[in-house]
Image 1 (cartoon, rainbow, N blue to C red):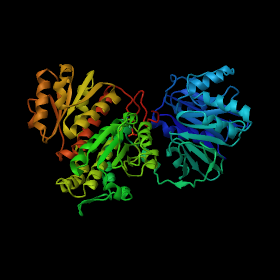
Image 2: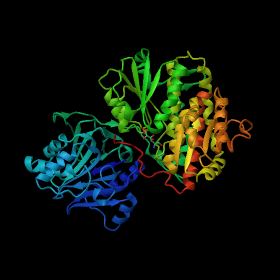
Image 3: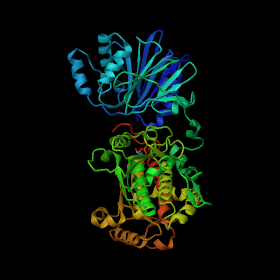
Image 4: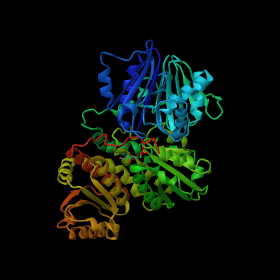
Length: 607
Ligand code: M6R
């Protein structure tokens, strides 16, 4: 989703802005823009499309100046057009603003400004901000006061960075529910919507919290409470972060790279936590709340998209292994439900990015309830990681492709560890799970070695308009995830169903043009899944089955893919891999933009 960068210091601002925006590209965007203020005044460039094309346009005619801001926009209000791209200036081009998020009361502010003769050029909510700041500047005569006063009038969820011709060598920033981090260099300062672009330059950072603003110069960082305009003392923290992980290397796409990282992803998630020899799971991140966890009698997991499907696997795992009732809720729905929550309930937020606005909103909703808030997060230092009482990091490393793959594998691994940790050895499955978790990386490697076979299957099925995924029990969330992967990457209409639900409606869709991918792995419900496949075949539907031996599906499925056996509770981790590869190759076959599917963003920072 939208990305923000800003620089102030002795160097040419353009270099960091271009490099930082390129680093944020993975978040997904449709237009790019920058403004740099130099001795000749401000120069604004905006364009629909990639950072690379802006970079090319500036070759031979660079932006000159030592402070500036840049933005990648993912359209919310107004189509991806140059006039809607950020930064947005006021009428006199004295104030320039980049903005992530949504200004909910922009129409009221716009109407007021229009009454006073302000002409609007864009269709965005953002454009009200520079005009409002300019109006406040005329009233107050001070840039900092004008900025604070304008921001205090805005409602919504946003982060904003501003530069002004009236305040040389200063960046102004404000945050309400959308991340911003200040990087403190040697005589230079950076700002960005996530730490990635900054890490190459400095690891010393200050995160802004909600309702905070900052006035930033090369050597000073004043944090201001937006509620009462008081100054806040905050020492910088040093981030332990390795930006090199996100390098494509010899891979054609980040998605393939990230799928192939799955064995290492599982190893990293288990490292130091799964103590096979001692038959023990140790989660340092939960130590602090160990006592509170003893009294938890209900867990609500909140998440979105792929993280939601991983959470569903977590629900089955925690209930079966630890015997605690769990409910998984879409974060976007949870926020607006009026359900009673007792203090013995724990909320777990599961998120790869740790910046998903819906998940943050769900956590914010329960902030005053006295419930324990835990995080299963991949991005170190992200908003969710910081706002939860305790948590377990996924340690999957940076995930760049918009389609989440290795994060799913890591999330399920971590949720299995949490289930074991909560079970405290009381489950009959305890020992077997611990041993089998350890065996997973080698089994995933075997599946990855089948990638040509999966590619051939994807090519065969990619030209269908519709697709169904079915699975039962632990494989039901995987069917949902398989369908999500296929639709987001290939744009094929795909649905995931619990096998047992077929006869309650979806069977009506089945004909010879509507194939089904059936997850038919060994387990308690294997025979029932076979019956579901038979019902589909009886209606002429082609079936591709993922199974543990060919014989079981002979004469039943049209195509089979055999993957290694594991215990049912861990099948989601293995079964997810061929589905990810299947979607990847289907997307390639159809000529899609694999790492950046249309209309989507990596980090969904608006509600
Ligand atoms: O960063 P999060 O895990 O909170 O993101 C949640 C979803 O936006 C994300 O999983 C999305 O569904 C992916 N594009 C799926 O591949």
